[in-house]
Image (cartoon, rainbow, N blue to C red; front, side):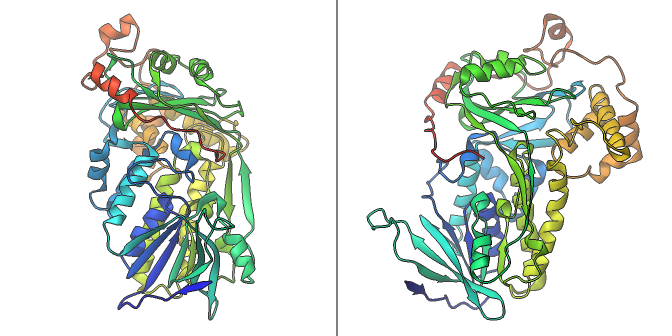
Length: 507
């Protein structure tokens, strides 16, 4: 085994980040603001551009950057929104650019001031990697695996032992070598070996809280039908009491559609395109099926099931090695159907950035970091451990006074959102957060809007002049300019590289 000598610097030394997930990339950005050098160690080969890699099987599913995630990324990577849109990410104004069937009916289309960025996960990762590669402080060490932590004096970590993949070597790996570091962050995701590493150093591994979920989902990519014209760019059909199924169609780079269907009752996910069409037709409204049945599939249907929420309680451990931190899914992994993983990764990096700046040194900070991250993640955990759609409706039914009041509030909000833009904004704000309602939602005026219910008849057809019945087309006013797909664009979309199935299981 060889030892890498520590770099000599005039500031705060060298940091190592294990894993190049969103949590790892944003943590590296926060550390680069403070440390002299940052090394990101990744087991996979990292593509140049938005290529698929084995360690991110969830990249096949629909991803959106909510407002909180986008804002946080702008703080860490100024101008990142422009970089993402230049690379092909699509801004979707909610609900101005989308047809949204909420639990109480179709939402009106108006300018709420809310939006998301829709893009493939591979593209998001690639744009963040490119920004980090442009920073002289940051180095990527790909096709390397971390196998252990190196202990230091007085309960600390002073580096990691890593090995490089070498297919010509007898065991497939080169000999281990020590990479010295002044701070180590584990962002290696669900498969994190931090509990084992801690046990090997004589520390108590964390106990875990695991909450199973009956959520299943399936995703695929389509090219829009040749000549497709619509006055919307995104479609969301939410679940409702007694029907926890959802469907979403979002525009992504290359003029393509990313489509995901969710079920909150344990129904097996569709295995092919025929099953996906049948499942889309079984949603509360058949519009999603009607739209995609003439589209061209560009990828297989990828399913995911046996999901769970898991919290490794590192924040509860009294004895802990200083200068070591666990973030992302390696710390708290949430049901991905709620779509808040990227937001929480970004906000965790902001916590790291703030505490490093305020503390002034990486020494003696681990306890505060663990507690601060746990405090930030708790509301999202509480929201995610409820049933699918619990941020909007309690699908399991009320079981106590607090649950009854919450269920009544959610039902009133869903009903009022169908006719009142202010109530609809409340619903959209709840969709974009994984925690308690924002303070603005609880203002008296907003509460009055919610509890008075719908202010008129609830429409039963989509608010669209291109995808509604004849009566609706005569009376509806388009919310956005018509969006057309030319024959050339459709052919170009069909030329997008088809994704090969991964041998890595989903989830």
